Structure formats: C-alpha cells, structure tokens
Length: 249
Image (tube, rainbow, N blue to C red):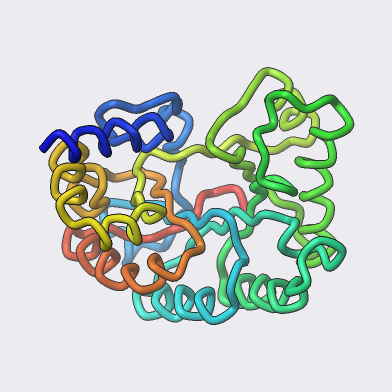
C-alpha cells in the first residue's frame, strides 16, 4: 500500500492531476465554444467535446491508426504539433511526419502549435521564445497553408511573456480540462497494483468516467493512445458526446 501511495505522490509531482485537484493549470481557459455542427447533430448530440492530441506527428503508423479510429467515430480533433518533428535538419524522419500532417489536414482535422522544440518557455529570452512560438507557426503555415490559431505551451506552463507573444500573433492559448493520462499507460500496464491505487485517487484517469459538455480532452500521439482510443471514444459516445472542433478555424 505504501508503494502505491508513493507512486501516486510521485506522479502528482510530475504534474499529473485529476479534474478535481486542477493542478497548476487554469482549466477555465480550456473550455471553448464548439463549432455549429448542423441542426440534426445538435438534436442527436447535446454534449460537445474537443479531442486534442499533443507532441506529434511522431509515428506514421500510429498516426494513421488514430486517424482511422477518429474516422470510424465521425470525430474531428485538434492536433497540437511539435515542429521539430517536421524539421529535416532536426528529425531524420521529418518527411514521414510531414506526410502524417498532410493526412491530418486532408481528413478534416485542425492543427495547432505546441512549440518548436517542446521545452519550458518560461526561462527563454525573447529571440528563443519567438522561435519556439512564431517559428513553429511559420513552419505549420508553410506546410499546410493555414496559420494555426491555437497554442498549447509544453507541459501546460505559461508566463506573461508567453501571453504577450500569443497576443501579438493573434493566437489563443488552449489548455485542457480533462486528462486521459495516456502518457502513463505503459507504466500502469507493467504495474497493475499502482494503476489500481492511482485511478482510485484520480478518477479523471478515465476520461469516459467524468467528462463534461464543453471539455477539452488531452491525449498524446502515442502507440498506447492509438490502441486505447476506440474504447475511450465508444464510452464517450454512449454518454451522448459529440466530437467537434472549436469555432475558430
């Protein structure tokens, strides 16, 4: 039991929080207005929700698996991309990641900015922060023809300087209000006792258990996410959720 509690405390220190404790994140900024999806779907579905995927494109096969699952559920999602994965000077697989990006756009999803290098922005000087935010936006625009509207800072951490750069670039900060904790799935599979204790203390682990209308759900571009996504979306659909994009396109 002590091991379970220690593990839970350690994960909490890493910034893994449930809906109830909120952690360091301002979840009031995470809920955004959904797009008008037509009268018929408004009658059928009354609980809009936004799916977001961070850190990709990372693996073309996993991305295609996630895209196929989204298509089966008639779901649209916002992908917050990390631009170093699209830069051939940094990532030797950038051409495959760019291919994934084009497929994401072609299937009707939205692309947002998650920073160029996925680093904590707070200690950066003005030039480095400009590169991380506007440099990433410029690359996304170059590759897709669309300037990203939404920005999610790596690790969900921000500062007044970050806010100033976003305002100058007419971008909107987007955090989240529901965490899938998919980054911990592999560890939980190896240690089921830790999983049992942690999910009891943090019911937000299963986003299908306590999601609310208007939530922004956090996922990552991971193999475990690709494997678990169909079950998660099925549970949400049974609760009458509709997976839509925000109004700013």
